[in-house]
Image (cartoon, rainbow, N blue to C red):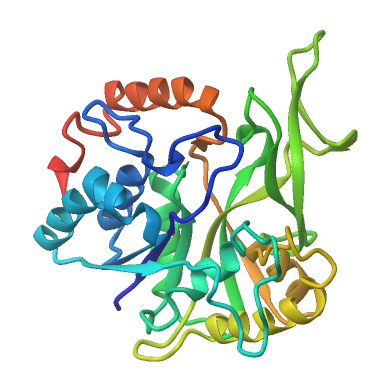
Length: 318
């Protein structure tokens, strides 16, 4: 079955401090983080890739990675498509609030590709490195039969996803007792890493509230089933709930309200409208949230290459 990977690359990166963080070179030959995700996805079996970007970064995007990826996809019989996230693309009958400059969030990013997806699909962030195992597990899950209300999530451990350089946002998961399904997921902002001076153990807190550092968190690596040739059921829900978002959330916070996938899934879970299976991955996550994160990410990829996880010429083993 054809399985799609949708890469969300349209974010502004307000905490990055200038430049387009999705396009920051981190590999030996100026590869960006997205190169590694595309490599791992193709290796795992994904046969279609959709990249969601903004029109204003299209030229830079194609120069930095687009032309290279087009050649790689063509050589490996992988379909490649682009979708464009536009702040003006909102439900009929509504208007963009005056003074609004912030994009509408990950939910709208996925909706930007709704006319391009007629098969099971997964979504990821462009600026997060997820490791190989998650792509294999997600591809295998998406190739199985599931109820329309089933969702999967590659689960990472909170303490392994924190930055040394400031607060991060994570979807903190609360598990059902006894098995790998989520009871709830709460989008939590400003999670900061703490280190116990006596034991060296890593902890986490969000605005003074202690969090379990061993909790599973969402890094926006979600999987949604579908029958080939049909609109994925979750895409229909995403479209319907976008209207509710404009009816209820935007009036409360017109300049900053965001339509976020973890928040939507958390709400659907609480209403019993979804089941979410955690696909446990032992790979370490890393990503670029702050400018200062880049040096660690570069060094991490150097080590993965030295350990033989990747070739010096990244795509040479496909």
